[in-house]
Image (cartoon, rainbow, N blue to C red; front, side):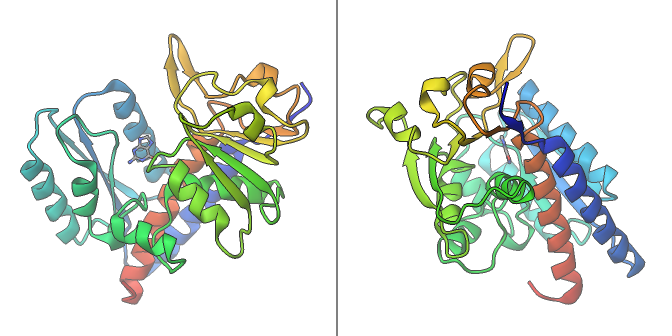
Length: 287
Ligand code: GUN
């Protein structure tokens, strides 16, 4: 293997230490920081993700409030819970784990969160602020990816970036973030209808695989020396595998994120950053 490993676990630990320091400062001013997680249904993978987010929050000194609703919960039940969390003085950040069970409209549920408490940065107002390049809550996974690239000194300015996958959670907001002034990447957003995916991805200096399709990206998709970011977290028998054929691509790429231990921990770190930032805004009265 020749590629450098972009170690999300290690970089996330640095971010989480900074978050813990900020939580301590707030504690010194009498303000505790709280994150509420909302899980609808009993998907085991979602339960694991929520639990690891809660554990990370508690390790940073953030109080974690766990809320679970049954898979058959009505929209009104979810909205009532979120209203309560919006009003709660102990809750600074709210995270609704996705995907929601069929029948619950994600846009409506995400839209019911107070945008100032939107720990994931997925509220329509925050996504709108992102498009307008105005201050808002940044989407957690895209922000985590940029923090990881920054840490390893991988520039986006002038880079050709291909993002594969146009999800609300990752692909679409990441493509927008990368194109903003200050980031200055040239971005292509590829998806299932993209003709000759490999011809496009081979042009990428930075290739982000976020399609949710195990093994989608092979060595022939990658320009020698490119940075490859694997956002896939696909359940595969005994463990998790990404969208990238790690063994093959690591022979060609210059740098690569592993799964697990790459983007996943960075998402959690960004979520905690958003939560402590929300608490800081509340104490200074800047909503
Ligand atoms: N499901 C998979 N990843 C995420 C995430 O980052 N946030 C939320 N809310 N749900 C997810």
